[in-house]
Length: 257
Image 1 (tube, rainbow, N blue to C red):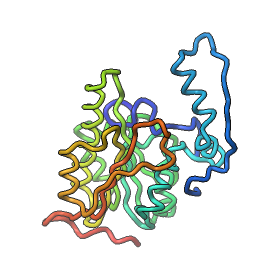
Image 2 (spheres, one colour):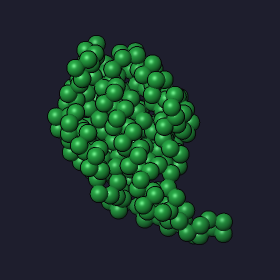
Image 3 (cartoon, rainbow, N blue to C red):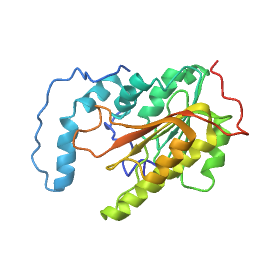
Image 4 (cartoon, rainbow, N blue to C red):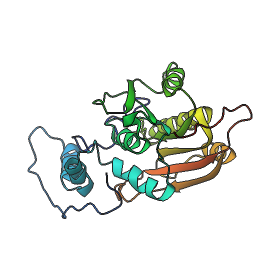
């Protein structure tokens, strides 16, 4: 996302190419690729490139035709939580480059018109069968109503892998991240059907108290999870809220076909 609503400047940590199986085993041998420093390459970009080349999940994503290594994070979380089911309506906030949407389309069977997957990001993504995508800032005032229209009814699952663009100032960056998670959580409460679930990326220290209070009020179970596919040195983790309690005036839950 980029800018305010997509996933940070680069989207879900992309493998650089398009990306089913699950779990930890990547089937990839250990790699230790080191690059000669290019004259025009900064030290940080050099480290990033070496990390990508040595990452077994990146190699697996390329081998399996996946959009990015991030798909394996959702696979691992879903293995335990059983979030994705055939016939669901799923909303993917901060979808680029499309790994989570790709998995959601396969499991919900939106590819064959059974479920519905709607995705949004500031960055463009190549078309994915079974996914309705809009390139737009989630924080745009027009985004909520547009997404509701695209969904065509209450969602069963709201996913958010959004990460705000950073400016290098720790306090400011933290506030930007919190604002995105908060906006995603409030929107999830608006659009979810009773019994629905919300999964969102957070960072170091987990979720802010106000957001946790909101989620604990409206969901039966709220917890933090860190899938094995998250980089070991990364501060990223996910907040998972399941069993949405709904509202007194909420519509009937969407029943899978």
